[in-house]
Image (cartoon, rainbow, N blue to C red):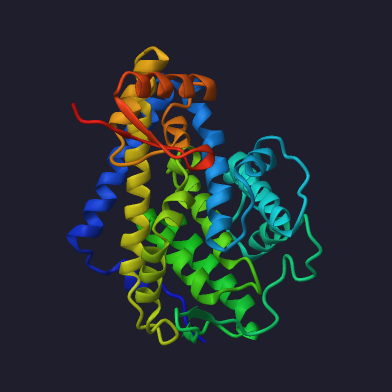
Length: 349
């Protein structure tokens, strides 16, 4: 069985890319703390937007989808799910809410991870909810010509409970004793979790929920305001590539987690930069038109009404629509498509 030990990692010399990402994240995290004190009320509107995006994106990565309207109803109004996909989405919503409200009271242990997994499936009849896997699972890829290939074989079921205990124990030790930088420890924990692949189903979504939980517990709250799951979903090939590069040799303990560490740190940093951009839009009192105009200046190429709505959480959807109409009428923007396919782009003067 793979032995989990952070001692080799603890003594590793990190390259300038990793150290630069860590330094930049700490810089942005400090600025975020200051921003939250200044404009707490307006920025709280980002929380609901991020919850919707996180719930939608993390499920969509696994092919679990519903309409935009239903996602909002499920997350904002906690309406009852209508089908299997919506049951899974509602479960993700529930776990995410628990993490948002109780992250500081959730120990990192197998027992609590199993409880969160059970809640993930609480809207459906899944007899394996809250239990580690009962059959061997595989991480595989299906190619355009139709053939499938096994990319990685996780731990067998009989080794899984002990392994889950071990990664929790090791993580708690290095964090509790301040033996390892949290921004290194968190990606390593998630990487090991995904290599164990402890559940018959829901491993990817649980890994993303645990990422949010661990970051919150270590003082990195960007995922509360900017969806990390949406960032991952937007470039999910990079996510899978980084994971595959880090998994090679994992069973023998010769794996190199650096590609996954860099990927996750890069995703966190991009989210912090997005947060700063959105703060700039609520920092000064402006008219709805000026706020939307400033938001469009941050967009390159085509963008949707929803893209602008997310950048302007202090504005109602009708205010955003009205401002976009005025900008199209004045010739500042060009509009394309109809209905859900409507998009805009800036016209250079």
